[in-house]
Amino acid sequence: MIDYAICGTRNSNIGLPKGREILAEGGTALDAVEESIKLIENNPYDISVGFNGFPNLLGIVELDASIMEGKTLKAGAVAAVKNYRHPISIARNVMEITPHVMLAGEGAEKFAKAIGFQEEEIIDELGIKNYKNVMEGKSLELPLEAENLIRELFMNFDKHLKEVMNKYPIKEWYKKLSFDKHGTTNVIALDKDGNMAVGVSTSGIAMKFPGRVGDSPIPGAGIYCNNVAGSACTGTGEIAIRLSLARMVVHRIENNMTPEHSAEIGILDVIKLNEDGVIHILTMDKQGNSAGVTNKDGLFYYHTDSTTEKITKRSSTYIEKK
Ligand code: ASP
Image (cartoon, rainbow, N blue to C red):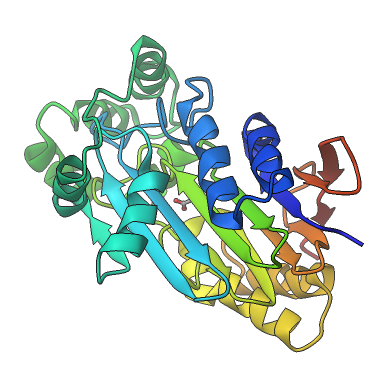
């Protein structure tokens, strides 16, 4: 019989020990999720979450995050937040002290400042180097003229954007700029009282269009939690939004499907859309059964619970496009 459980994607093994400690001491799923994610947001080597998250097209880091509590269906989210290291904590405050679910951009930043969060630079030389490597170094395999224009975008965005968009389809060059440079941390926790919570934090898709918001802060798309199960997504956020992916996974578990099977159906829906893009679904029910399912080979997640001392790395089920 499991007393508590916690699982997470990506570099969540950095945060899960703390979450586990909180749960073992009888703390809440919400605290376990938030504190785990804060440690991941602090990691400067994780290029798609929190500090040193990959910047947008203009070299500015914009973060999305959300948190949701199962027993109350309360949710809090922030989108496109700049200059704050812990969007997950701002999201939790949106949930707990405002009448809203989501704050975006400048409004979210003003809110964070008002409640005492520290404004700071959230990119250092390493993050800037990663950005410059993409902007200046790597060939995008586009006509040279297009490559040069794209690199100049950040110097005079309005002028060059119009020029580039007039000459080359934005969908094509955008895909090349962002290819494979993205990721999100998802953490799902079950506490000793049987309550669940889910948290999600990301810098989104690398080189994203300024103001682009993915699935991560959108309840139903990149995150969902009720008193039966929790679910969260990583990957191409646009796909998760279009399929209401996280909500659908939880809905099927409510109807007695196993987490694994429900997430598999979610990935089959992704494959049916027939779009380029990767999705990983992480889900866990209130018995502590977790599953990771994806359309990309080689992905994994971490899980630990009250029956073991270890944090186990589990291979996610890969469903291949036929
Ligand atoms: N889902 C995130 C987004 O679209 C990115 C990722 O998880 O790779 O913003």
